[in-house]
Length: 136
Image 1 (cartoon, rainbow, N blue to C red):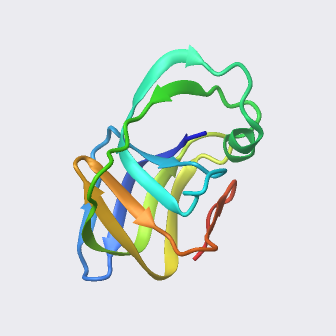
Image 2: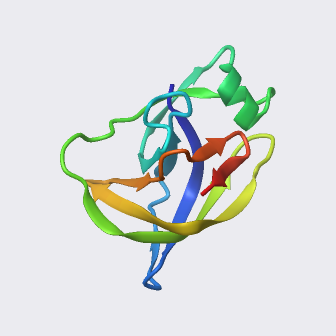
């Protein structure tokens, strides 16, 4: 299960550069997969089809009253090239805990790119849950 966990995303890199992603990019995460420590950012296509009952992990993140929609994503395969190291991420979170969030990582996190998509590669043992980014 993939969730679109945020929009209006930007990164402050350790070299002082700021990367602001296009408005059509979402923060894409699969909290229950083997890739749970990879967070993707890229375009998605939201449909009008409402999810009748949110899965437990989605409900915990967005809130039980959130009206989720089916969306389509196409994360590319192939080579990812390093863009830099992220110090801070900013994003707008939808749902019950809607707000504009800022998370400072406790160490630099590699950011890579493949076409229109970006990927944060968090270290093994990362915690990204209904509270958002927890560790690192």
